[in-house]
Length: 255
Image 1 (cartoon, rainbow, N blue to C red):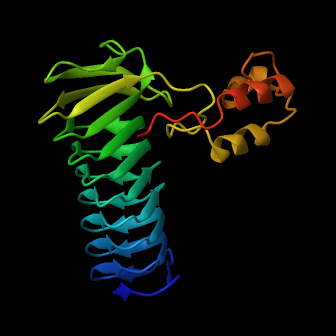
Image 2: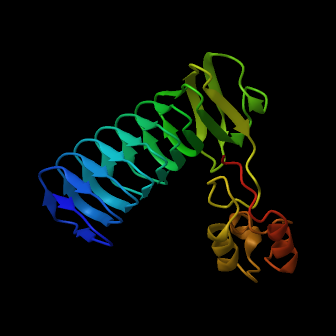
């Protein structure tokens, strides 16, 4: 199945299925909220993709400045992003590796990965949540940033070529993963910004939406400090918290 042209929209219903590859070109929009793709999904040329449920039987491949968000579902093979594409993974299961090439960006805030996280050729990955049952493997002038605390290595770049990294990721998930660096690949350890409520490495409008959802709430003492929005914490979300948030506005750890 192939979509072309400007703003071509494909919506796959919960009980639908496509037995072949799905190819998306030319500013297309693809939304999967259920059902199944029997083979690969290949995304090109500024397409926008959202996957919240369902299954992809083989690989998920993105190219050429596409933007993709995965918040659920199962991908039975690998996820590969390349050519300056942007991939954000907030949930779901990936049964093989996640790989980035050619200046792509991959943001992992949740979900699970059964194999490796690989970056290559000036690509970048941020790991702030989720479970990795493989290795971190930055190669050839690429970088993986691990966003969290309590690491068994000091903050900053890891000098060891290989080893095991433990700690707690920004969203609270435990981290215990092996790593191998190759060809000037880097692993950078950093603490999360207190105003980055969605743990994606930048304080922006998405985080402001979280703050706004708790505005003038007075029950933060029993609501986990209102997801951290109550900076004090003093039990409520008020002007003091807004000022603290504003002081971190547009802070960005991504390249």
